[in-house]
Length: 80
Image 1 (cartoon, rainbow, N blue to C red):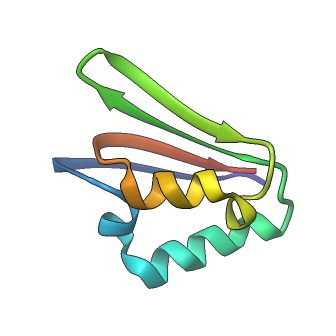
Image 2 (image 1 turned 60 degrees about the vertical axis):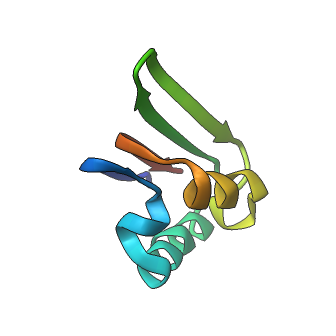
């Protein structure tokens, strides 16, 4: 089953800043149920950027980096 998390913020923020460490960890744990990949899309002044990988978010170094480093005002996270 897919998990979706969308957000809109007045100021650019990372997923970690928006959710906090504990909530981000709990949401990320949901990726272990099926572990079929993840994707994160966020708005930029030039359009939309995307980061994605076929591994579970919990096991993905790219996901950890994006969740803690990528700031955005508008985004959508998809765990499969």
